[in-house]
Amino acid sequence: MLRSWRRALHDVRPDLVHAHLGLSEVVAAFATPRGVPIVASRRGFAGRYEGNPVFHLVEGLAHRRVRVMICNSRYLAHRTQSRDRSPPPIRVIHNAVDLDHFGVASFPTGPPSVTVVANLHPYKGHARLVAALRRIREELPEARMTFVGDGTERVRLQARAQDLRVEDALRFAGQVADPRPFVREAHVVALASDHEGFPNALLEAMAMGRPVVATRVGGVPELVRDGQDGFLTSLDAEDIAARLILLLRDGELRARMGLSARARAETFTWDRTVAETEAVYREVLTSARR
Image (cartoon, rainbow, N blue to C red; front, side, top):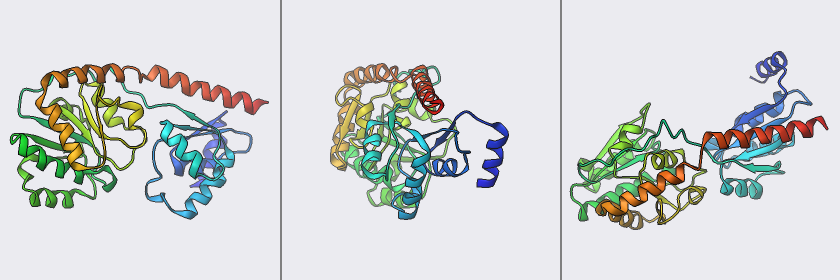
């Protein structure tokens, strides 16, 4: 792979290489010709390489070639500074959302509904939401929840839903090309992760005018203003359920927070993200020429 990358870079002769995510940063560091500066982007944890000491050693060596690291949240920037070996200079550029594509949608008229857009991986915390659904159903028997996404946890979550007797209220939509229809049919969008960088699923839901309930982890508080755009919670299922019940019951609160969520999403434009990224490119290229 390195040989093919070197050949491609030799043919293209770029002024700058931008590597996205951890493994691509390592590849770029060893494949990019000397004298060509590298910018790297970090948007979350290292996936299956997280906690692998060999990978982190190699990643630390790769940092020596990186002129600037772009992180998509202040949380991730701080984490990179505190745990990486010799991290490069860091700039924070938050994610952006296409405000036309994710347009405001009116609230549905059906039963109280919660949508969760996240792949079914353990760290996404779906098990908490299954437990929360049981508590929600005690107060709102008609309430429904939809999981949009797929992954290794599906079978376990289905079994957990049966154990808690909420399988009739929980829908597994699977992997979808477009999550917007599922957000439109929701009164609230939720995310109960153990950790996050800066979750696009919440940003897109907010752009569609949906209040959100999310665990107070990672970069989530940099996006969601607690009590304005929705609620931030602990990792406790009872806490999550209580906030969801409040929003599902109160249409006025839901509408007010939905308007606030949309206004908040409107500050994360692609024009801003592009301008800030181009500023990093200019900074790096100017430094390289010197």
